[in-house]
Length: 453
Image (cartoon, rainbow, N blue to C red; front, top):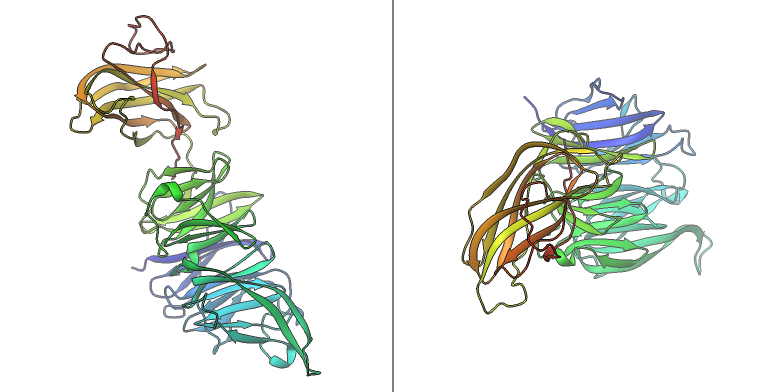
C-alpha cells in the first residue's frame, strides 16, 4: 500500500480548486476541492512518473501569449518540466529539471542547481533565447549553495537556499555596444546567513516573506529582514517546514517543530499535537485560509474542530518572589481562566478539568486534581485556587488542563508565608478568602488552546 509523500493545494485552476497528492511510489492523484468532502480522486500520473521529494509546483494564471491554457506548472529534479491544466498532465521540456519554480514578471523561473532559468515574456513553454528567454549562474558569494525555494513578495523574486538574493526590474532592452535585445534584471544580495534545505522552509503570507532558517524564523519586507523568534531559543533549522493557517480568525505560521507564531499579536504558542512528520499545506477559498495536513496517511483540516475539549500543559518559569536567598513556603496556588475573544462568538460555558502542581528548584508539591467535569457559565473570569505545601527558594506552576477550545489562562497566583493574601476574584472552588487583596501575579500572559483536527 502506498502512502502520501507530499501534498499541494491551489485555489481555482481553470475554475476548480485543486488538491494534488504525490504518493511514495511517485504516482500522482488529483481531486477537486469541494466542501464538504468526500473528494473524488483521479490517478493522473502512474507509479514512477515523478520523483518523490523532487517535485515542485507553481501556478500560471490565465492563458499565456502562445495560447497555452491556465495551468499548474511543475518541475522535477529528474523528470523534467511540465504542466497540469486540470485535464492533462504534460511533460513540456524533458531536459529542463530543477528543485524550485515560481512565476514572476510574466515568466517562469526555475532553479536548477546553481543556475536560474527563465522563459520568454508571457509564455511558459518558450525557452528560446531568440524570444528573450535565458538563464544565469549564481556566482555571488552570498549564495554558497543551490537555491531551494523561489518566492515572490513585495515586487521581488527571492532566491533562497544556502544564502539569499533578490531579483527585480526584469526588462527586455539593448545593452551597450550591441543592437541585440536581451533580458536584463537586477540581482541584489540579501543575506549570507540564511540557510534552508527545502522549498517549504519559506512562504509568503500577506506579502511578507517568512523563512525558517538555521538561525530562527525571519520575516522579510522588501529586503529588510527581522528575526521574530529571538525569544524562542536555538530550536530552528533549515530542514524544518511551515505552512499558514487561520484559527479563531487569527493568522498563524505553523512550524514542523511544533511552534506556532500568531502574526497579529506577535505571540508564540506550542502545538497540542505532534507536528513532526506532517505533510502540510494551505489553500485559499473565499478569502479564508484553510490548511490541510496529512497525519497517518489521512488528510485532516487544521483548526476544524471548535467544540471537542483538548488537553494541554502549561508550565511557568521559576520565580523567586523578589528574594532568591531564602526559602518560601507556598500555601496556595491557583489560576484564572477566561473565555478568549479569539473564538467568536465568545463561549458562555466551558467544560474544564484541571490539575495543578508546584515545581520548585529542588522540590515539587503533590498534584491536585481541581475539577473533573464542570460546566460553568462565565459572565466574567473564573479563579480556581487550591491549598498546597511546598518549601523552596523558587517555584513555578504546572497546569494540566482539559478544556473547551477558546479557554485561556489569564494569570497564575501563589500565596506564601501567610503574608500575601488571595486576590478578590470570582472564586468557584475555594471559598476561604481572609482579607482579600491583590496577590503576587507571576504570569499574566494568555495561554490560548489552539486546536487542530
